[in-house]
Image (cartoon, rainbow, N blue to C red):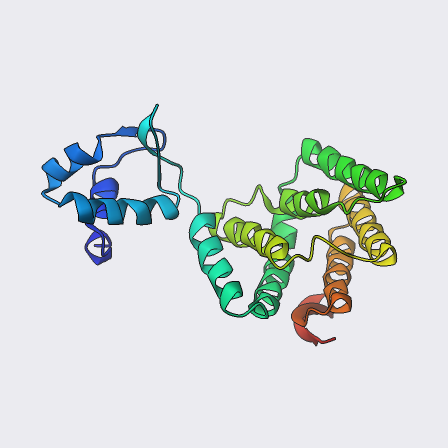
Amino acid sequence: MILPKIDSEFLRYLLADGHPAGARLPSLAEISQETGMSMGKLREQFEVARMLGLVEASPRRGIVRTEYSFLPAVRLSLLTALAINPTNFDAFSGLRAHLETAYWDEAVALLTEEDLATLRALVAAAWQKLSEPRIQIPYQEHRELHLTIYRRLENPFVVGLLEAYWDAYEAVELNTYADYAYLQEVWRYHERIVDAICRGETAEGKRLLIEHMQLLSARGVAIETPTLMNGAATPARVRT
């Protein structure tokens, strides 16, 4: 049994009662009366559940059970790690690189025509920002392009880790400055990656993806990225 191993009476109550996503829960006072938990202890454990993204509360709706997502827990832990030591981003970047490479074929196979249109539109929007008199860094397009490729995976842990990567990318402010030549190179890769996907050239897209991720080394980030050897991805340490 898994529930007894969860060290939170409120979480056990929440999960054991099978409250579906979107369901409205009793008030904390009612839960306290039902479970015998003190209000102080209940509020503490409720806050943990809220930080895990399992519940939300508002004066209008009360307490509502939310859909499970791995992102809130991993994002909180990752941002804490970055606050302790910002160079922890390097290690997480390596994990992200291997995740995207490992799940590339599976993810690309799930893309729909609508997804392909979205990818092309993101590339066009990024080039538009880069061609304006006051150049804008297309960070949102960068984030959304990568996540669009992997979003249809039926794996909340992979998707949550990839989403957390982009929150960390923003937290360490890699989204706030880059020289124009670097941005152009990044988006030339994105354009070629999307073109390869649209042509059905999955292996070529993966090769370009790996080359693209290695560009982080030019920005002072040392990450372990995959390389292709005989068609298979193998680790390669990228250093500045």
